[in-house]
Length: 103
Image 1: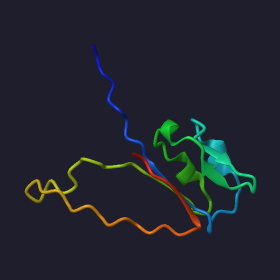
Image 2: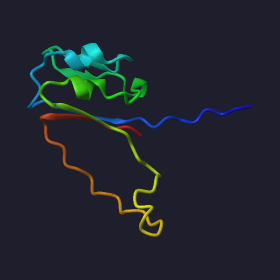
Image 3: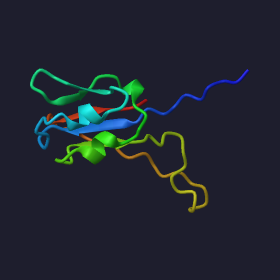
């Protein structure tokens, strides 16, 4: 029997201070990860559906959304004798940002 590899969930970062609520990111999301709230701003409805295509980030005219693939468990600095870089400190998130972290 084949076992499915669990896909890594990306991190979606929405910077509301820059977002004008145009809805382009919601409209272009092929899997329905994003939705609009009562005020018309995007939010992450279902992060598990994200396929990390980046269409929301590419299409955003305000650069208000970013999608990052998680690199958990992968070596970042293989050229330095196979040593792993230390984990970065937890980033402080301002109230203007909505961050949906992957696992």
